[in-house]
Image (cartoon, rainbow, N blue to C red):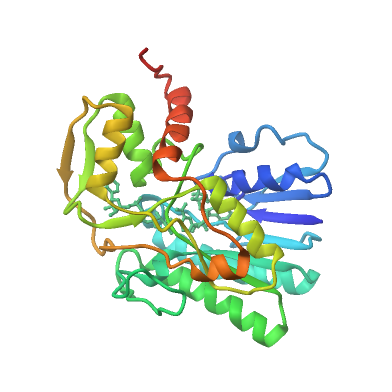
Length: 314
Ligand SMILES: NC(=O)c1ccc[n+]([C@@H]2O[C@H](COP(=O)([O-])OP(=O)(O)OC[C@H]3O[C@@H](n4cnc5c(N)ncnc54)[C@H](O)[C@@H]3O)[C@@H](O)[C@H]2O)c1
Ligand SMILES: O=c1ccn([C@@H]2O[C@H](COP(=O)(O)OP(=O)(O)O[C@H]3OC[C@@H](O)[C@H](O)[C@H]3O)[C@@H](O)[C@H]2O)c(=O)[nH]1
């Protein structure tokens, strides 16, 4: 099987590549523009004959002969997707069009990593795939959430009009080793802050919730979806739900009990609650997450300690 992973130099993408490369029958091609990803995440595969890395921006057409396309390319942290919103929406719309064009031309199956952000600030809780969402079309997050909604539309239109084999995963907040230290998302922020002995920055009101999935569970779900028979959309996430204050308290307890927790200003349109209904993933993919937050955080702490050069006190 020859597999293209767009965004494969990023956080989830590089873990997906590791898993795909474990199967010696697979050849993996990564296309990435290194906006938020890095070659370093893939260093163990560079030079391996079954692996190829291309510096490529998905807003430009790409022609490679492949059987499957995992289309992940898109900045995922709010700080980075809001940094150049026009580029983010181009990546979601033109980038997805280009990858669908490629899938059509070479007859490949394509999986899109959509997001729980398509549910916006959800009025239904937990969120099943049948919920259409509550999204601000002109807000500062729209380049990302509306961008992914259009990307889902394009996937289904290519499927209905051209018979392309599609898969859509709606990913909920995912964390784990290799997240950028300055990524800006909440778990990486809190772990880096705790290790540096800086106050944990809880954005107000602190009662907003998220559900955090460990990256190995996520990769397992994505591969099951790609290799299974269902188009989706299917939620992939861990239903364990926490307020941001609870998350800060857990990180403090596990990593640095001496650290302070500071309440800071939030950004516009921050969703107040988020938790996946994973009934479909369980029934259709036989998938459910295995790693609990309290078990995943120490694995990420270990990686962050190494990269920050902070050793554990005995
Ligand atoms: N991590 C999460 O919690 C989460 C949640 C929902 C959805 N997702 C989706 O999963 C995918 C991967 O997320 P991640 O957390 O690994 O983020 P990430 O930022 O670490 O990875 C994204 C990768 O895409 C690359 N990229 C960005 N724009 C590109 C472009 N125009 N052309 C080529 N490459 C480009 C980046 O350089 C990076 O390597 C994204 O599509 C994201 O929207 C992630
Ligand atoms: O330092 C921080 C950072 C963030 N937060 C809060 O933590 C919560 C989560 O924020 P994050 O930036 O980690 O991520 P969000 O849940 O807003 O968006 C995320 O959701 C779905 C994905 O598609 C996106 O890729 C991802 O960034 C928010 O309520 C935010 O206000 C803090 O309290 N402190």
